[in-house]
Image (cartoon, rainbow, N blue to C red; front, side, top):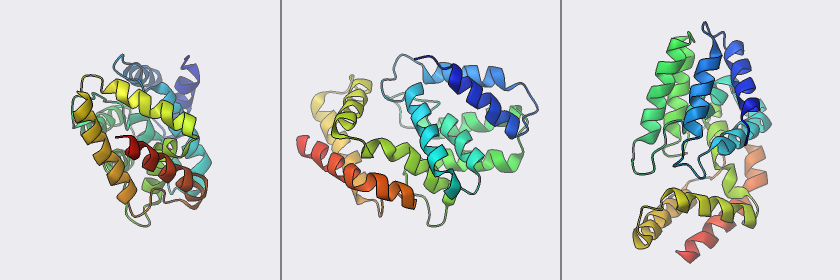
Length: 208
């Protein structure tokens, strides 16, 4: 799918954040990463969806543009065969945004937000973290058909993992999500997604 709209959004975002350097090369490099061949779910379409959900929830955020920056970086490093993707994505955010001339305080906030996607469990009152995590997990609250497509794409990303091992690992992920104090923290996301997400997660868990 063409990504010109994403590059336009990135450029506008960096300009709003007073980047001292040309945003174009940074945006193109990020989109190259989001288009890598090992990705089936964690693609530019996922980034587009997360950004759309952030727009929907922006009134809840303390710093909506920091949340948008975190969305751009939260899966920028993605290797299914590695476990430190979020940490490496956060480090990439620090390097790129510092080089772009963004203030250290905002860079640190973006780093913190990206690292939150390890657990999707922001502290109570962490409004930026709540918006990012809700936007990232919105896919869980889709229609059964959309959720099935998401789950199938995740399985494709882990095609190298034998079926018994994948089932065990995936079940652990689903149980962890279902055990969260709340899947969604913003009122809008709770109302829109919770019931469907719990039904989808429970249904998939029943197949593993």
